[in-house]
Amino acid sequence: MTNTIEVHNVTKAFGETKAVDDVSFNIEKGKIFGLLGPNGAGKTTTIRMINYIILPDDGKVLINGIKAGPQTQKMIGYMPEERGLYKKMKVGEQLLYLAQLKGLSASDAREKIRYWLKRFNAYDWHSKVVGELSKGMSQKIQFISTIVHDPEIYIFDEPFSGLDPINSELLKEIIIELKEKGNTILFSTHRMEQVEQMCDDICLFNNGKVVLTGNLRNIKKEFGKNTVLIEFQGDGSFLDRLENVRINNRSTNFAEVRILDGLNSQTILKKAMEAAEIHKFQLVEPSLNEIFISVVGEDNIKKQHEEELRA
Image 1 (cartoon, one colour):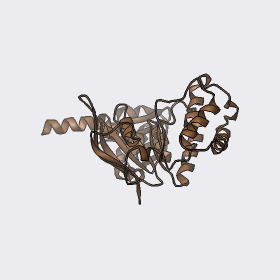
Image 2 (cartoon, one colour):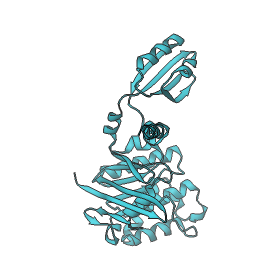
Image 3 (cartoon, one colour):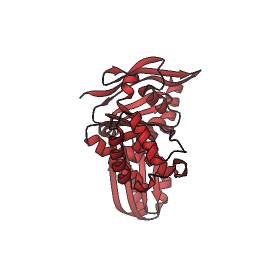
Image 4 (cartoon, rainbow, N blue to C red):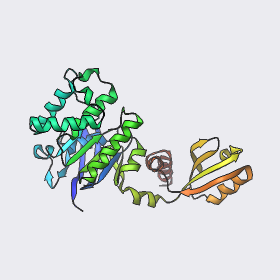
């Protein structure tokens, strides 16, 4: 497969802080790629280097084989996490201005703006002043301004922020449509469920470094079936007595249990059956949220600390 975006050993420091530390990953043409990690992990800094907004101290970024620069900016539609709309302009004027900046003629821009406003059930916002819009409405307008000129590459930084579930679903639908047209999409998000439903490949950041990258399906397989879903009727206190597990989700008659340190799932089943009537007991692959916690969370920190003590 051809790589649309290549990040090679990129490093960026701000004073004494190394925001991005020797980061490398590739994004294949026509794929949806998720950039994940906690706040301050280096995701937005990396995105800005891909967009040629800031320059790396070391390493290089290639877009379609060309070193990132003014020429490659024209290939990208970028929606930053800090939204950048002009609050005193009307929605229609704003979108027309931004579309023409990206090279569309006024007539083409008007046609595409009409299409996308209707698609987002926002056509009657055309004459509204941007400053009067809610956060969710502004989010839609920012998204339209990012995609209206039909770039080859889309980069969305936290695109679902501020959207209700219905509009999140609409946005997801449109992103998948863009992929089906052959576009390459990179997005950064904390919303693990969106990544799980949409992404082909992921890159997980922590403290400025890549800690996990690759095909999402393969990553989940590698982690193995180490999560148990239990539906039961009766006394759920057996969950409190389980050792070497983490309870991720728990309600009156349901629990999602992560098995730690090689515990046999049958031990969990036996203890559950002694206390309650079991309606479902299923060993499954971990959710992406669970993988995230395992790689950058308490489990991993504890493991690293134990290894340091043994060294």
